[in-house]
Image (cartoon, rainbow, N blue to C red):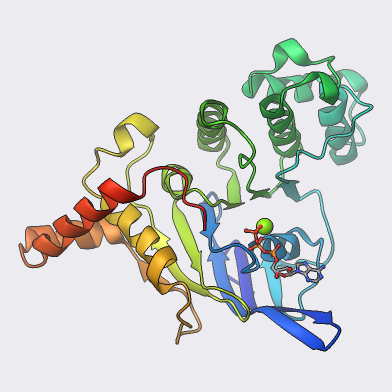
Length: 306
Ligand SMILES: Nc1ncnc2c1ncn2[C@@H]1O[C@H](COP(=O)(O)OP(=O)(O)OP(=O)(O)O)[C@@H](O)[C@H]1O
Ligand SMILES: [Mg+2]
């Protein structure tokens, strides 16, 4: 039995087409520990959503296995909550009913009052107590996405899967929901696997960031540890001495190394903040670190579209 909470072993996915098939990714190996927040970053089309769908049990791999909490994932389950980019709410139900729907499925023995009280608690966590009886069409995009997040949390899944959940939101709303997500995760110890294209978002939220090489035949090249202290906030995190070492490492991978085929089966374990501080302490490669700093401070602020 796997000792990790989630263990993905030798995963590959082929899709057929007219003249054969394409192997989108192959021999993908990754682990997620209980309570960890893991983001995955990689260029468009490398297979991130497909991996997430396999983790959710919504798609089947061509080969390989996903084990969660000691059991093989086969088909969808309330143990895995998914938030998609396009906030898939049921349009004919109110905010409260959209959340209660999942809670009732999870707790068939609960009374209506229990279901509603539980659902309202999670809607209040995402600041939507005032919109319980509105339908999705009456909500802004950011509010709809909060309903999706509350719905996923309210079913108390063992694993929360987020596919670019903030991709369509403006920067201000995105920041507010990121803060809410961090707070909820801190209080509940939720295990999260999230896809994002935003390097700064990934650093803010993650315990680890998985870097995926380009497809076809994509693989997880590196597992980058984000050892910045928690609680984190976006204003202060950039002042941490390790922040730009991490950011530079991620961007350099996306810009210059993602096309390289990894020559190792397991992702390389990397901690750029630790590497930077130890190299500064040794005063050995500090000039290199500083020049990396300068380059990326002046080039790639904000959302990196990979
Ligand atoms: N059902 C399908 N049938 C055929 N090809 C598919 C199918 N689903 C995905 N693909 C292909 O698999 C590849 C990976 O798709 P996927 O959506 O997983 O990429 P992604 O990394 O999530 O990209 P993005 O960052 O743009 O969302 C793409 O080339 C896509 O065209
Ligand atoms: Mg995708």
